[in-house]
Image 1 (cartoon, rainbow, N blue to C red):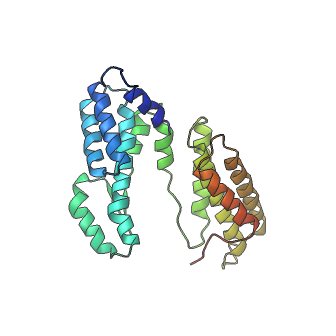
Image 2: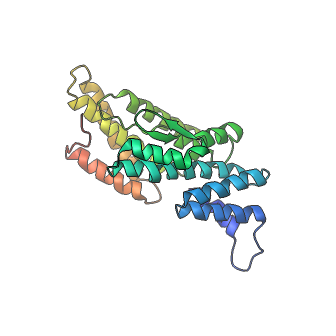
Image 3: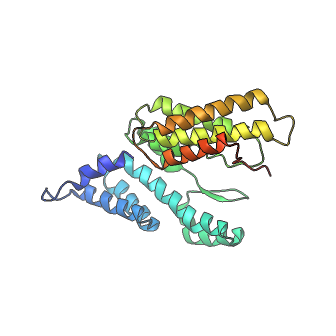
Length: 248
């Protein structure tokens, strides 16, 4: 991410002058986030935003604050539910403890971070070097397993818009892989859907070709990453006709 370039400027090299107070506070907040001590990170980033509105890192703090809230709800709510704890009980415990943050989206099925800090960043600081990350985080990850292609098509279109708008984004390998994976799912939906009204050979062929193209683009990324490994695996599964999508 771009943060590492920025963070290197904050920390400097051994023997250089002491950090300014805003830099030191941002560093401590980032350390807490990296260590997944999310409540400490939230507190420190909120302090930073309140105390240093003129800091060069100001817009970055909103991005990192959003990530802290996402991490908190993932660890303290979602992972516990996935581990088998009753959702209603986990939800109530989470809201009793963290409800005062007042940034949770509540649906009958689950709790989510409401993404408000990413939206604020994009509205108030559209030219921030971290704006690409905020825009990316706002794209809903389609996890519907009922075989409806609409959400996947929308997600791919929004990801394409990110690449068009932020041409130099460091998120490019991740975005390319995510698009390839969704095209792969669409290929299987249009090919194997139990609903005859959804099956469509032409669309299936189109999305299969697009998945292959995007997987290969991911593999060509200049820096090898976990997404290159995932792309190679996805391409292998596609070519061997091993299905990745389950219809429920």
